[in-house]
Image (cartoon, rainbow, N blue to C red):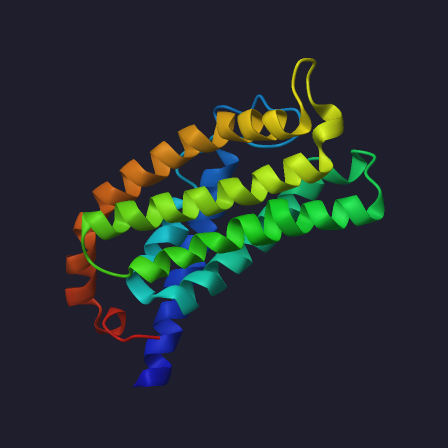
Length: 194
């Protein structure tokens, strides 16, 4: 029975990663030259997996999503930015692998209610912002616009897309949290920890 539950969770995670990837393709606000966009709630499916199944499943789902985002970043030309190999590797680590994997930590707030969903969403949005900020400050300060330091440029540049993305994530996750008790009742595998 436990193996069957794991397979069901894996199927749900696969669908949610696919949904997250598709939502990330619909980025109506993509004005940022050095990366970043506001999507139609691309973080929400991964947040919901973490809230339903816990941190372990959330992190696994988020890591797969991070790899897909990294592939998309390279397809959009990230490799042609003229970065040295060490800077490119650090950017990959901070802007993709860590920034998207931390979304799975919403599982710390695992539960059925909107309060947990809102707190978990805020928590992971702050963590993701911190990853992008650190990368921008450490590696992309050379592209700061006139009048900005590397620090202030990283703060404002990353806030310009992460704040709207966070608002969308928090609102949609909080609203969809109302469905979680129904999911837990209808799918016995959602009740298991792990």
